[in-house]
Structure formats: structure tokens, C-alpha cells
Amino acid sequence: MSKGLTQEQVEALADQVDTAARRNETIPMLTAAVPEMTLHDAYRIQRASMLRRYRRDERLIGMKMGLTSLAKMRQMGVHEPIYGHLTSTMRLADGGQIIHSAHIHPRVEPEVAFILGHDLRGPVTPSEAMQAVSGVCVALEVLDSRYRDFKFTLIDVVADNASSCKIVLGSTLLPPATIDVSNLGMLLERNGRIEELGSSAAIYEHPARSLAELANMISTFGEWLHAGQIILAGGATRAIAVEPGDHVRVLVEGLGTAELFVRG
Ligand code: OOG
Ligand code: MG
Image 1 (cartoon, rainbow, N blue to C red):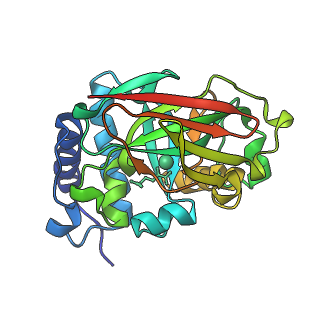
Image 2: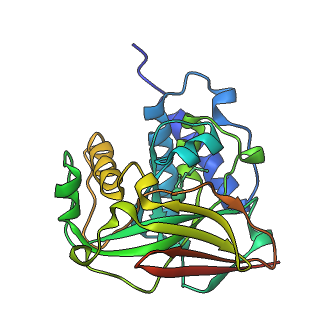
């Protein structure tokens, strides 16, 4: 059995993805140079790249699930759910902006977010996971892959922190007991036109199932989710590329909106 990459290899690959993310430069897929890399190695690289961010005073504010919907799996050609880490510099205000030229090829997608009121340690069921949730809100995620043409394998996208870039949360935070998140209508609009239309049911069949899966996945690293963290359950539709001048908005039935302006 392969023992996986050495810590030196993991650190060198983490430097590559971290530098690419800081400079907004594309890099070739890591698996092209290191074909023996496993999924576990990719999560080690992701964690090592996060340590570089924490040393620059970014704080961990939550986590995200990705590729939890069929629409996203089909769009990206990757068919397993993945997770990534969210930090303080990724958070934008509702109605905030990004500068297009400060990113590589940004895309946006509609999401549902959970705010945790309690720690959540896997293994858990979806209904147990929901007991740790204190608030639910709409989210707009900005993705930006560090790989050329937004093309990657499962292992490469995990090493690149699941294409994480920015998040916008809607201003309405509802207690989970007051809203059933299983099948809420979701819209992604650009410049007032509907671009994508879906349902929260597309998110791993139920956003709570996605949350539970995240807790279960990180438990293999001996980790758990913490009270106060923001958890994105995954995009419900395809992600769309944005251009300078765009105004994008996500609407989730009963949860309100989250919006973003894209400047040149
Ligand atoms: C990977 C990240 C996927 C989601 O919600 O499905 C993701 C990507 O599509 O670049 O965030
Ligand atoms: Mg996402």
C-alpha cells in the first residue's frame, strides 16, 4: 500500500496552490506532475495551504461542501462531494463587490448556508446535524479555480481548497425550526435576468444531509465543526462566469437574497 506523499512534498505543493491563489495565477494540475497523489494527500495539501493563510492572519470562519448537486457534478465532470475551508478574508458584505481583475476567472453559484450554534462532531445523521444549527440563510458563493480553464480532477480541486474565493451571506438569518430547508426554490440572477433556477433539494438531496456528510468527512481527520462557524451546503445549480459590470443576486424562497457587484 502506498504511504502517500511525504510531508516535504505536501508542503511544496501547498506552497504552489497558496502562491497561485495569492497572485491570482493559474497553475497546471498538481496530478500532472505528481500522478501518485491520493485524495487523502489532496486534503493534506489543502490543510497545509490553510496554515499558510492563518500565518498571514486569516481566520477560519467556516467550511463548505462542494459538488453535492448533480448540476455541479455534471458541469465540472467530478462526481464526488468535496469540502473546503472558509477564511475571514473570503467574507463579503451583502451588496458588496469584487474586482474582476483581482481574480482569475470568477464564477458565482447559489447556496444555502448554516450557522452553527453548537459544535458538531461526526458521525452524525442529518437530523442530528440540524440540532447543531442556530441559523439558516441564503448565500452566494464566488468560486475561482487556480487551474487553467477551470478544469481539474477531484484530487486537484481538493488540493486547491475546492476553488474557494469569496462568500456573501444574505442578511436574513432564520432559526432552523421556522423554515423547512428540504425543497426551497432557488434563483440565480444576473443583471435582473434569471440565469439558473433550482431547488435546495438538489443539494445532496437535502442540505442537512450535506452538513452531516461534512461532519462525517472531517471526522476522518479527527476534526469537527465548531459553534459559530458558517457552513455552505453546496451549489444548487451550475455556476456562472461573471464579467465586469455584472450585478448578481441569489434568491432563496423564504430566506431573501444575497447580492454582489462585479467591478472592472
Ligand atoms: C468546485 C467547488 C464546488 C459547489 O458548491 O459545488 C462548489 C468547483 O466547482 O470549482 O463549491
Ligand atoms: Mg459552492
